[in-house]
Amino acid sequence: MKALKLVAPGKIELRDVPVPKISDNEVLVRIAAAGLCHSDLHILHQDDSWPFFGTTMGHETAGFVESAGAGVNGIKPGDAVLVRAVWSCGTCRSCRNGRGNACSINGSRTQFPLTPGLAVDGGMAEFIKVDARHLNGIGALDPVAAAPLADAGLTPMHVINTVRARLADDATVVVIGIGGLGHVALQILAAVSNSQIIAIDADATRVNHATSYGADLALLAGEDAATRILAETDGFGADIVIDFVGVQPTIDLARQIVAPEGAIRIVGLGGGSFPFNASLEGEVLPWGVNVQRPYGGTEVDQTEVLQLADDGKVAVQTDTYPLADAQRAFDDLANGKLKGRAVLIPG
Image (tube, rainbow, N blue to C red; front, side, top):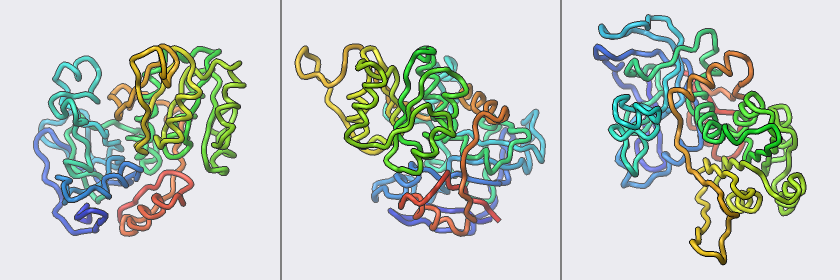
């Protein structure tokens, strides 16, 4: 079979490799589609110390069951499935408490849980083997449209669930970055709340489309963005700010517009930062602000966003590429040419 391998810093290659052999509790999935996201670019540009060269890339995967091990129940050949991106153990304290994205067995204090496309072979290939626990049935959903929901759907769903109690009808939520994850976050927010939703992006085309995804107000990033948002909130600030970019200007914007006792969720890996001062003077945040850097999501988050997609309330805009043309997809993502989520199609 063909598989896209990370072979060196900045270098991917499509190689011929054996079809994986499955154990009693595993399922062999014939891949229909594999999504590509900015975290794949971060992986691509790791230096020589990266320990996972030779791994098949891709953590957003959907397809059809090819075969199932003798110990697998309830899954049969031909079933349409999504491969979850967080492979937690299912038995540790975190997993038992519903926090599989903080698994202490397949992850650690400083390392996120096992994820396909990193330490284990991912979905940018013709087949993938998966423990049956890590599959979700997708019913009649198109696997090409469903594949990105393993991250582009899961991550914003998890982020929004961490602030669900704050989504009152009179709350204001600001979404910074209307790309692969951000445009899904707008749809989820519109589906699960009646809060005021404000979208911000540096790309005028994305801003123009934001209201079609559920935003009540869409603003072009710039010097007056903070002023506009404070004006919309009577000078008090937004209850929730979700930053899907994470560069210094967006981090600065988040702290400038968040309200006292508000919440900031920093999802993007753009390298921005801010100081925290345990003092009465010089603090950059209002009192009581809750800041979190979330990772992935849980089984419950995945199930919930798939249900929203099945109900027609969430859809990922996709740009498809043949698996053999993966380099162009990576280049287009890096150069900001994509209108939606890049999805690689084997065959």
